[in-house]
Length: 153
Image (cartoon, rainbow, N blue to C red; front, top):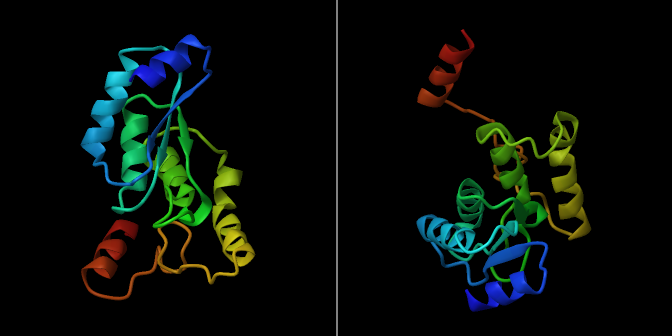
């Protein structure tokens, strides 16, 4: 906290809280954001790594606790296990949390952006990624299809 106090005193425009080992749980992120929020009015950011598969959840918890700037990468690409996947964070913020962070036109291009970044990284797009993977909205059988049919009728 002392580092954040010094940064605030030096005129920082934004204080970015980092989970660089990716081992923090969402409830711990909330506590940390609230503790820092109690010390300063400087806008806060979050930078979460995905070592425990929690980067997206931690980013959303941080936003819910008052963070206004998020960091991440397209498709979650990054060192070790990656960073918060902006292809999941952005739709979650807009569609589930009601935060208008992109226009509908921009959101509609997210799959295209995801595939482009995969291509630039010389990787095959992950068909299982939420929102942008080709399997994201596919249903094969059983209760999933039954539920979808009931919802459409």
